Length: 267
Image (cartoon, rainbow, N blue to C red; front, side, top):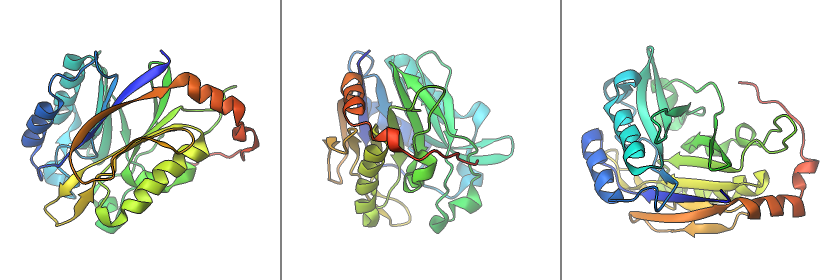
């Protein structure tokens, strides 16, 4: 229980073609499963690309074929599979991160910070709550892309007698290449300031709007040092491990959390 094997899936995406993307990802993942990894992380909007065509592309949550595919992959592979999907739920539209578990009971997080420079705030609804999940003794905060720029939303908060709300921060993204340096810097900054691991998965390729994506998917430790760092715009599938004991030891050795400011996030 002291390690969490995490697989980063950096890939190109077919524009607004969920069936093609699911086929591509299934081929890319091959026979990867619970013997090799505990967690498979796909990019933001892995089924469509970062589309603002929510009224046509968002699938009803209750009958979503993409969500069903994600859950089936988790069941078949015997590990958690996660990524975000455009969904419609009770008349609202969300960029929704699905945390699909092998037992068939998915948890979801709705993207809080909507990227207004692309008009996302006009085409999707804002998420209303933070979500922390647990896997193999690791508590993981779920986030999506633009959330990464807002440290207050992502800051550790004490829970009961525990100073740490989470042990890892997970961020899936469609982060364009012109802003690759902020992406890389923010992943490391969030790890350092929160004394946690950070899992960041971005796409590559070019979308239908002509935006290029450089990837730069990373797994970062609690000191901001990369465990996986592939600064290249090519698809890859790489697995790294989060070490629970190493994290606990560092938090004891460097207890910066004891001097942190107390605050409350208003949602």
